[in-house]
Length: 560
Image (tube, rainbow, N blue to C red; front, top):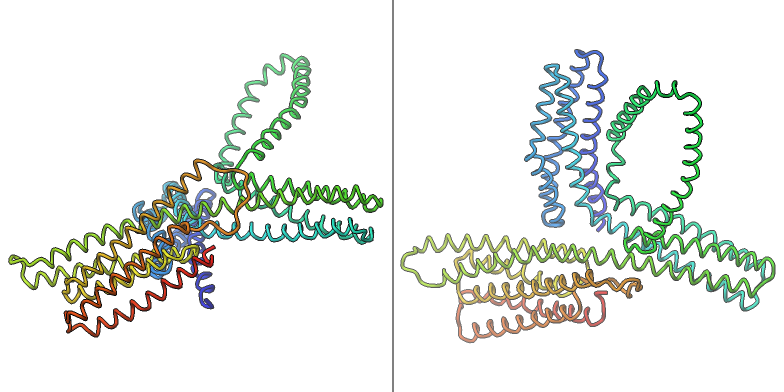
């Protein structure tokens, strides 16, 4: 854990800094080309800088691919994303585009080079967008942590406000109560401002036009077009203005008066529409804005309570304090609902990822089992050498399944809300390693096939549990309860019933394998491999301990 944070920081720098440098350098080249007044000297300078940019991009590509290899085990999702980014770069021949720009600049064809630069910038933006889209989980985790901090601050404010209300009822000194009330009101104001900033960030993130508004080139083009239209309009209207004279001025004044009168009504209607959207919206930004309004209302009640305390009006002060607490409780319910929605989105994404991966593992495992059964059947047309080669191929396939199980295990452990699924995936990984070792030796006997059958059963049960959880998620999305506060604890990846069923299946497989090994020892079969059999029994004993621990964790609620 001590070395994890520096590695994460280094990975983040490697992700964004070089690509940002490439993008900014490309923009700078375009600017230089458009404003160049000395083509010869400028072209030579641009060639050097463009070659440096091309070298940086190639180095960046190698770095990303090395990073993808390093993350293949610990973070398979990010590893796959890195590879897909540069597969897209190769498909779009971005390397060749930059190389072509160097050639055009060397030949002094600045206009063509500028056009190629624009397309290169667009391609780099697409790569950057793809990278950022893969960072959703990190942004979601940061957003969840921010909301949790808001909730912690709000809970403390509610506790302190209740304490002030109780002291007011008990007859505490009014000057001290007034000061305490003022302090809580100030802190509520600070929390309200922070929630408002959070709401604006959520709104900007969800807005489909946010990126278009942040594109300066688009604004510049729009301003140029509007300026051109205005100048054309002025030229065409000049004769009519001189002929109409003062009549045009009077009509213009009347129109201006009407426009100034209509502006307030337009603004008020816009405000009403935004307020209605906030009240009816169920997204994060709408709920955050409602939270901000509740906090502002609570602060207003607190200020009023302080004034009543300064005027020695305890009854009226208590009334305002109680209303302030109600507003704070409403704000807390909104924040809890935001957390609940975030968790639902997180679970939905993870279930899809796991379902796809487990389904692919199951399909591959059935193919390995079918191939093993075929090898176990005596065949006169197949030589021993061919059988050994086929067994080695199946061993490699089984090893790949074990690697996929390890990647899926990393996804589940990162989530941390399930107990039985991680244990089942761990058993699949261990069984895959054991089966691969036996297949490498050409062992296609009953023990090997029994291990493969156990893997198939485990994957089928996991797939069923994941599909059931996905159906439940879809049902919740289609029939939302709406407006209820979040239940204690985060939503688990799968429910307790599914976890317990999986634990039962894991225990049944341990029992079956124990009987199988006991039969082998009793019958004296496979005596040559007795040492390996004893090692398998040791692993089975350790597996029994893990199942017991998992059942205890589910029973005691450690998954919540």
